[in-house]
Image (cartoon, rainbow over all chains, first blue to last red; front, side, top):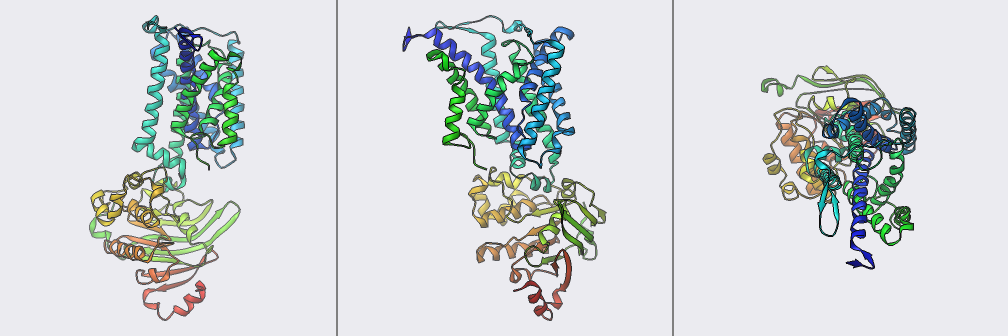
Length: 294
Length: 243
């Protein structure tokens, strides 16, 4: 069976890859959006923290015998704590300054973290086995769906929409939204805003590390895996609109699919299609598809 | 926090501000503010724009830059406390421009500040006092009218049980009928023994409510007018306020 002359297996295969990439874009841009909303910081170290998540899983398995399922919980916690230490010791001094300072500091941090991992582990990359429970796949008739890929998509959707629900529909989320809008007044009402900022940064970082653990069995674990991805993720954030929660999720998944489709119909453009869209969106809607001017 | 027998005792000092200086970055805004308010009293801070009235309220909460001097709330020194700790001593703040969060619904705004003690009004009592808010409770904060926003900003701090209210220009830009409603609300709060400090431009609104007026000029208190002196000092007040 063909669609526009493309075999359906090839089309579905690329859509699946697009959806997988989109899942990672969505989790990472969600973390960036949450952090930018409350801290006013463009967290350029997000890619390095994602890489730390993947390496954390690999180090845990190789040196400590920690399996995938434990790593999926423990690594985001550990990396999240690392993020909170960074926030307490460095980022908190930048909130009153222009975005540029936060971007430069986190960019510097990303280079340092990557450099350290490169020095210790080289750039050849390590492979991480798919956990036994998720090896193999389903034959859907028109395509073969590896179990692990289905798992990545499902768990990403749960994490993204779970985060969206917490932020937009719960009391805890109302603090976050209020803090994003007017943190001074929120503190005057008796909320410990500095603590909330630290925990929020920790949560955003933990999301990046979680994506890293999820990615370990799919991509090669290497020190530059984050910097390769983060440029695309920043384009996703710009297209979706800085600071919009639902915007970052929908745009992340959507652009993953667009990229996958491009790879089928015009493979030469697949590496740039997101940046072309970014250019068009910036010209027509500078605040992004879901963003508000501020 | 305090039991009922001492709560309404008019001779107990609720707030004493002494030699308060406050800065925004390099600019020195308050130059030694001194005043005190007893429990259950209502005082106003009057003065021209830029005299330092709003800054005085903000400085009590720690929302300015550097501060020196002394701020005692219920006999406790608070100048070194972080802002959120001051709120938990029972201070409710209604900022200029009302501070309604646009990304929160009316009811989320109402429920946002944590209760500081158990004496706050229940949601039912709030909706009885402000029936409009119940109808509009699912509307986003940005869709409320100016009057509704002001009612919400008041209701928000009444629910927490705060006993010392700092109200900044609550009548600004509101229709006369809403100002009247606010007057009734303030009167009933005073009857309940709450201590209130109002920054107010609308002198006709404030005069019948207040026990005392402090006139601020260039970051200092230049005149104190009690309720009884109001008639005799009216000319002086008009001169100071430039009305």
